[in-house]
Length: 148
Length: 254
Image (tube, rainbow over all chains, first blue to last red; front, side):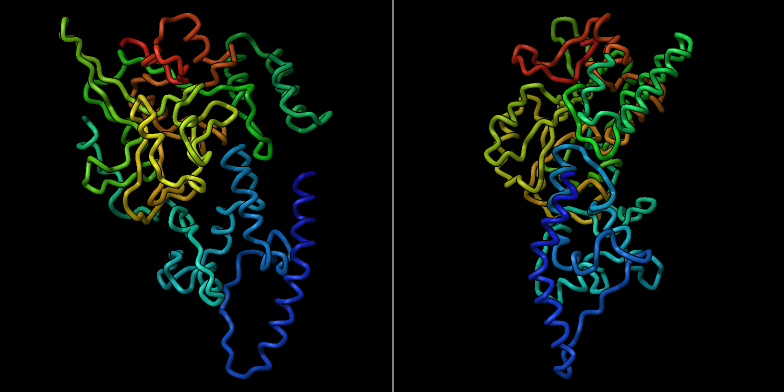
C-alpha cells in the first residue's frame, strides 16, 4: 500500500519535471552540435518503472528504499540500489564491469553530462560483486596485526 | 510462541502466515528430533518485504573455552566478509572483531576471547549520537546509518567495549551491499546482510568450519533456539554487566 502511494507521489511530482525534460529533449536536437550523453542500455527490456519516471525520480526511490533497508531490514529488489548497479553494469574491453571512475559507467555517463556530483560511490560499490572481483588487492592480510 | 510470530503482520492471511502455519503443521508431524531444526529455520525466514520486529532479539553466545589457541578465524572471516582493508596502520585500521587476551594476575590463567560490538539493549552509542545515525534495529542489532553519520566519534568514546572504528581515509573496492566510506564510524553489524537472508554471521560460520563451535548465533527470544536453550541452562556472563546495558553478546568461561 505504502509503496503504491509512493510511486503515485513520484508520478505526480515528476509530471512537471518530465514535461520540462521532454521539452528540453525536443529542443536540443534543433541546435546543431549539442552533444547528447551516451547512456548505456541496461539488461532486459525495461526498467523497474517508466523511463521518464526513472529519469526524474530515481534518486527519490533510492532514498526511500535506503531508509527502509537500513532501519527496517526490508530488502526487496525492485528499488534496490544493488539491483540498479547489477542491471546497469557496463563491461570494459576485458569483459569486466567498469567502476564509477570510468566515463562509460551508467551513472557517470549522465551525471557528468548533467554536472550533478553524487557521493553514493564514496561508500557503495559501483559495480557488481561477481566472485568478489572488486577486491583484488589490499584486503584480508590482517591476521598478524589483529592478535593484540 | 505462535501468537507472537503471527502478530508480525496485521494482514488477515498472507503468504508469511500461510508459510508459518504450513511449517507448524510440518513440525507437528515431525518427530522431536527434527522439530528443533525446522523451527530454527523458520525463526530466521523473514520475507524480504517485511520489516524487522522486536519479536526477535539476535545475540551471540561465545564459549571461550572452545576458542582455539591462537585461532583468529572469526577475525579473518569478518575482514573478508565485510571487505575490511589492511592499510598497514594498526592504530587506525578498521577492526570489527579483535581478539583480547585476559590474564588473571593471581592465578596466571589466561583466556583469549573475541570482542566486538555487544549489541546492547541500552546502547550508549545511540544515546550520545547527535544525528540519529547510531541506532538499534527492532531485532536488537545496533548499527550506524552512514548516510546520517557526521563522523563526530562521540559513539566511539561512549562505547565501553571500544567496538567502533572510524574510517580515516578514502576507500575503494568496497564489497557490494556493505558500504564503507571516509568520515564515518562503523562496527560489527552482526552481518545484518546475512541475517536478513536467514543466514548466520560470517564469524560464526568460520568458527564452526574450523571445528571449534565457540560461537553460537540465534534469537534469544525464541525458547526453541540453540542459544536460548544454552543461556537458560548454562552459566554465561555479559562483559561489564555492571553497566546494565544488557548486551546481546554473552560469554562463557571468563
